[in-house]
Length: 256
Image (cartoon, rainbow, N blue to C red):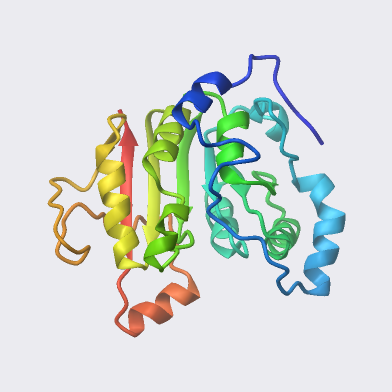
């Protein structure tokens, strides 16, 4: 199903000016597509449910009201993984509509299966590069919230340029969030947490909800991280890490 509005494209030229390196051929991707394991159930869900609950990528703005059949708050989740958290949030917030973006077929299949099993009419999935989805499909000031939970930290220093949370992409995201909306990130990798805090604090359209910020040499020594909001359920992996003494950092910023 391809649903677009009659509105002009969502400031594509402006977006490309913000992100001159972001286009289908040359921008640095925050993921590496590999042939991973996929179960028969995930394959079947992807094949049978994607036409019902999926949206194809298109270089045109999504008409969310037409997609969901109502006018409701809209939240974008980038990197849904296997979809457990995404589905739980959507189920707990039926008055809000959600667009989930994921590139890996196994994860998309797992999320589609959850949508079908739970009957989540307020959740759709886009299987595509999130940078291009935000750039080409999301109009300015349209989103009520954005979730970026545990993106790939790219641990090695030489790979840090592949991390999703970079100044240009954050500027683009901020332009798509309505004034008063929010951007919520979470990570369990301390160096990435510190980078996220630096990048988000530097974006003029965003304000930190966690009060005064003190940037130190490490995330553990810095202030400006937020308590985990009630709407983000902890994952099993996260709970295991906490039991082992690993840190988790949430960052919650609002659009000014």
